[in-house]
Length: 263
Image (tube, rainbow, N blue to C red; front, side, top):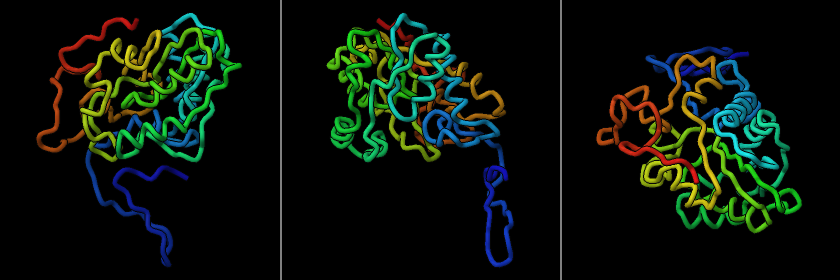
C-alpha cells in the first residue's frame, strides 16, 4: 500500500490498523540500502532497488571503462550492477562465480578469522567462463576487502588473463551509527588505503569505484540521502569522539590523500 514512514509505528490489534508517531525531525534515506541491504525487488522511495543497482552499474561503466571480454558479478547482490555494467559497456555477461547460499553475509561475521573461513567456502569459480579472458569483476561495495581479494584469486586460479575490479558504489571510509555493522574505521580498507593500494592488495589489474555523484544520479528521486559511510557527512549528530571529516568533504577519499590512478 505504501512505505512505513520514518518515525512511524503501525499497530494492528483488535481495533484495526492505526499509525502512531514516535519520532519527528529531518529525514534521510540510507543509500546503503540501495547498494547492498535491501532485497532487489524492494521499493524504496518509489524506486525499485533492482533498477537502481542496474543504474549504478551502467554509470560505473561510463565512468570507468576498461577493455574486457566478460563481465562477472560477485554474487548475489552485485548481479544487477554487473548486468547494468555489461549492457552499458557492450561486453558479454557471464556467471563466472557461483555462491554457496547457506553461509549468509560474510561481512557481518564478528572476527577476521570467521570472515576468512566463510569467504573460502562462499564462492566457486566457473573456469569455462573466465579462462583466458579479460574479466571485469563487479561487486556492490568494498568494506574490508577480504571477499574481493579471495574472489580475484579464484578467478586467477581459474585461468583469467586479467581481472579488473569495479565497485558499484563509492569508497566506504566512515563508520555507520544508524544500524549497519560498519562500526570502526580501522576495519575499512577505504579508510587506510587509496584506490591504487586497494588494487594491489586484492591482486587486481585495475580497480575503480563509482563516484558519489554517480550514486546520487542513479537514486535520483530521493530528496535527502544518508551517505555518511561514503562521505563522513551525517544527517544528524553522531556519538562524541566520532571521526569527523572537514566541513568541505564531499567524497569518501581519506582526508589528505588523493588516490593515484589504478595500476
